[in-house]
Length: 478
Ligand code: ADP
Ligand code: MG
Image (cartoon, rainbow, N blue to C red; front, side, top):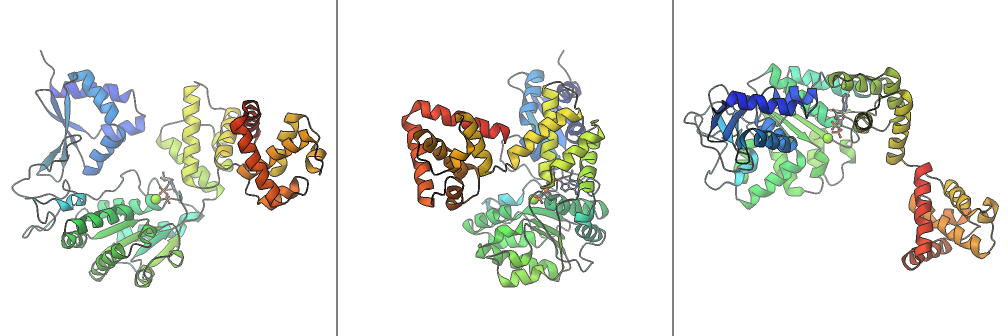
């Protein structure tokens, strides 16, 4: 007797559960509902377009294996995306076909995402006369919420302004709200969180998150397809417009023009605009003045590098969410060591967990120290000329004084050249500075040394093996 769709999906889930973290399972697989099984094709229902894209991007291999195990090599998976309570549309992996439309909605842009703007068969997929409420997929990342965004001195203003906006979109003086700050400091997360919160508070508002690069690409497509009007009309329909990384608009005049247009329309109609940028507006070069001055109409709030307590709090929140138990001293050491930004901090945590589970070791402070020190070194290597000279001298059993002297003894000259070569590759020092450290040579001598080392490496195997070995030592102890 063949299995029912529920049984098939149940078995798939068992397999998936063994292969993903509990958190991922909960977030991405529990919400899925199996719908039917028809000659080897299993249909599953997913909550949103974003959800579908996420599964396709991150879990397709796993899903494929699960389906193959259950249904054999011929087995297929079809997604059905919930659009609202009444209608659903299907999406097959890898199929770009526009799904059959529903009588009532005529066309549903949630499946027909803005990227499809150029589709010739449908002149204007977004504006449907007489249809009151449109359903646009917001593209929000459901994980990036306020709840998951740790508050600290570093983000206090931006976070509270964002929160205020989410309570009264379009109704505060924070319009536009521009969030700026360096990479990995939480701009995308916070901008998303505002969108997610608005969707929660005002389910009827149309929220749209888009990255400026994707916006630009869509616009270019629209120009190609003679459908810029559709493009503009579409964006003018949204109630909350979130544009991430607007600095990428720099130098793109046509895109800035169309964005200016949309911005004005939305702003005049009391719609909320949320922007992020990696620098303050004044520092964005190649941006039209009239746009820059619009950006300043509302509030610009920055995100700073988180201070130690916030870094600890972020780590605690992450391990708690993932259901992992890590000693406090380990977390604190991690927070002490990684100071650049939150993304790096997360990266170090993930790498620590991964290594520990690979080696089947418990994470003690000692183990954490070793791993983190390595991680820090790989990401923020700071090597000095002196240090390089010392490694080279040790290797050739030379006295450091000789290295720094003017002597032209052959063995010293070669060691010195190698030190210069590494100093140029590994430090930010100028040629003149390197020369000064190596027996008071000028920049031309340093340049010549680098060329000589390169040449010798190409022609002399033994010499190359010295240099390679030295390079390893430099990296090892750095
Ligand atoms: P940006 O867009 O500024 O480059 P992201 O928003 O992508 O940075 O953030 C990088 C990572 O750091 C994300 O995984 C995000 O969830 C996390 N992160 C940043 N700030 C915080 C915070 N205050 N609390 C929790 N996680 C954060
Ligand atoms: Mg970002």
